[in-house]
Image (cartoon, rainbow, N blue to C red):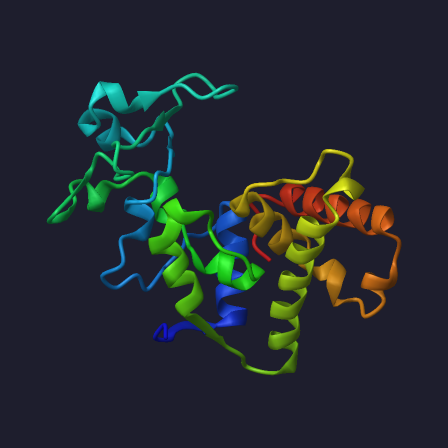
Length: 215
């Protein structure tokens, strides 16, 4: 049986994660000894300001992703799925790690009620299953239920989005978080799938339009 790990108050996590997605805050994950995100075959987006990473990452691990702006790269991973900066002693550049690493928070999968991916993400998935949020009140619990309901709809009603729905776990979880307030309406899930999908996309666009602003 997986040991439970305190994920914190849901409302605090939700506030901080929304701020991170808007570019006005960052993640503060109680990782402990977990290095799941370092060993799970993730491509890491490097921005021009991630100067230490650019100086330290071997050239063969610097990749250009389709559609990336000039000066942006993806950092690849080793054959065993490990980040090239990860060693037995930990991250070589932890104090100056890329912003992508600073923003990563696997609790978003717990909030959405999904896993981080297939078997190659097994270390993260163990952590995702272990997290347990606490709730300040019924409204706090309802917000979590809404995020999970949004993720479930996005996964199960993908055809209602006419190709606009994400299929990767991270994309699903992020879209669910951005649009979860749609599901705070008790009548939401009785709406036609196409109308609900449209509301989700509109909520996500409104969230993104507010980028840089505090809530």
